[in-house]
Structures are given as structure tokens and as C-alpha cells.
Image 1 (cartoon, rainbow over the protein chains, first blue to last red):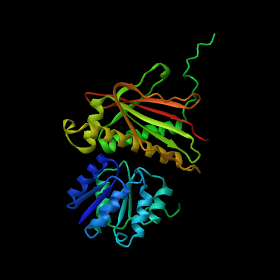
Image 2 (cartoon, chains in turn brown, orange; image 1 turned 90 degrees about the vertical axis):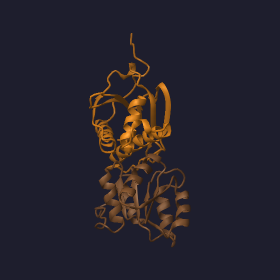
Image 3 (tube, rainbow over the protein chains, first blue to last red; image 1 turned 45 degrees about the vertical axis):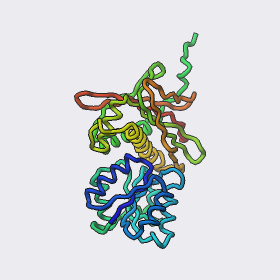
Image 4 (cartoon, helix red, strand yellow; image 1 turned 180 degrees about the vertical axis):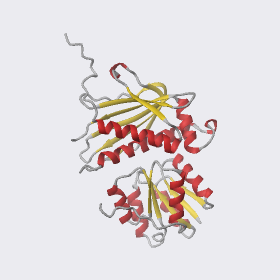
Length: 133
Length: 175
């Protein structure tokens, strides 16, 4: 299984790659949404999870998420947002657009690894806890 | 005769916003860079020049375009140390690009957390600009538009070889 990180920060992609590799998955990376979609087009059969930043240059993460979920080639792939966007409204927007999980920066390595495990079916289902928003 | 300094036309920053900024910086450095900090507000900042070797600056705006900026300014040794801790690698193994990108990510996380606080219970939806990094020994980030609330905080690492960095916020907040 391959995990694709779409984040404009190379440092953040390195932090994420450590967690992904430690969990025994292969790591793919893209610095913006368009490159992420390109990688997905080539590797969609092998990608089991997408980790997506919100504030990325060009098309933002939410729009990229919506594009992924509209495309029948990729719509089955779970997407976990990994972002500084911590407002409840934004979390709700992402979940309503099809995000499977949401991790806000700053995070611990444990938060990140638990999120990845949950999205790949090795943990309990994500509950954003936003029923009153 | 009044001897007002040209930079003293600033209201104090809202105290709850100050707390949010401090809490965000401490949380980001503690959680992501395993670095505990002490902090103090700089009083008489009109005469204090917060210089450094590397800075990251980001804009925070509401839906009317009102807002301001937040910046972090570090000596290079501390920037390199913090970024090495983000990646759990030796500081000497980092490239200049790594250090720049790491500092950019630090200001992104501190401002993201501050933005979430500002949006709580408010109709305003705040947005961040993409952060920019400035490099150069002894540079100063100067962004203190007249009449806008301004804050300068100096952070100090709690460890044997304690090092300092500065955080500046200049922010016009709708009440």
C-alpha cells in the first residue's frame, strides 16, 4: 500500500514520511494539488491513503479534496486532512466533502500514526465530534 | 514639550489574543520541536530592535481584508536546532532549504492556531497568506503600521544553552 502526502512544505512531507515508513507503507509525495492528482492518475491502483494539506499554493486542499472525491478513479481512496485549519466549520466542511479523518497541526507523531492506521482500517472509525456545529 | 516617539501610536493588543499567540507558540515548539519555552513581553519596544538571521512572516486577514501580520525571528543556530528537532535529525545534516522550509512551517503552525482562536465565536472567517522567509544576518522585520495594536514577545528556550527568538504581531482586530 502507498500513502500519498500532498503538502507544500518539504519539512512536513519528511515528518509524514517517517510515520508512513515506520508503519510499513510506501511513501509518495506532491507539493501541490495538481501534482497530487497527476500521481494519483498514474498510481491510483496502489494508493491506499491520501494525506492532504489545506493551505497549498494554487488550488487549495479543500478544492483538491472535492476534485478527488468527484473522480471515480480515486473517490474510493480515503483522504486525511493534515492542516493548520483548526476551525470547527472547516473541519465540518472537509468531512462533508469526503475527508475520512482530520489531524490539525501541531500534532504528535502518535496522533499522525493513529490517524493513518484508522484510515487504513486498522483502527476505529473517525468521529469529528461536531454534531452541534 | 511632548517627546513622543514616532512609533508609540499603538493600542495594546487584546489580552486574549496575546494569550492565544503565546499558547500557540509554546504548543507548536513543545509538540513539534520538543522544546520548552519561557516568554516575556518586551515593554518599551519602540527602542528595541528585534534583529535575527532568519525570519518567517505570515498575514492573517478576515473576510473584509482587515487583519495584520505575525512574524518569528531567530538566530540561525536556534532555527537550525528547532528544525532538526522537527525532523529528529542532527542539525548539521540540514540544508539551508530545510531550515528555511522548517521556519516557514513553524510560523504557519503558530498562526494557524492563533487564527482558530480568532474565529471562535466570531462571524469573521480568518484566512492566512502563504508564509515568506527572510534571510540575512542582523535583519529586522519592521511592520508596525501607526495606530494598529502591536506586540513583541521574546521567547527563551529552557535548556542549558538557552537561546532567544522574537515573535511580533501587528493586528487590527474587529471587536
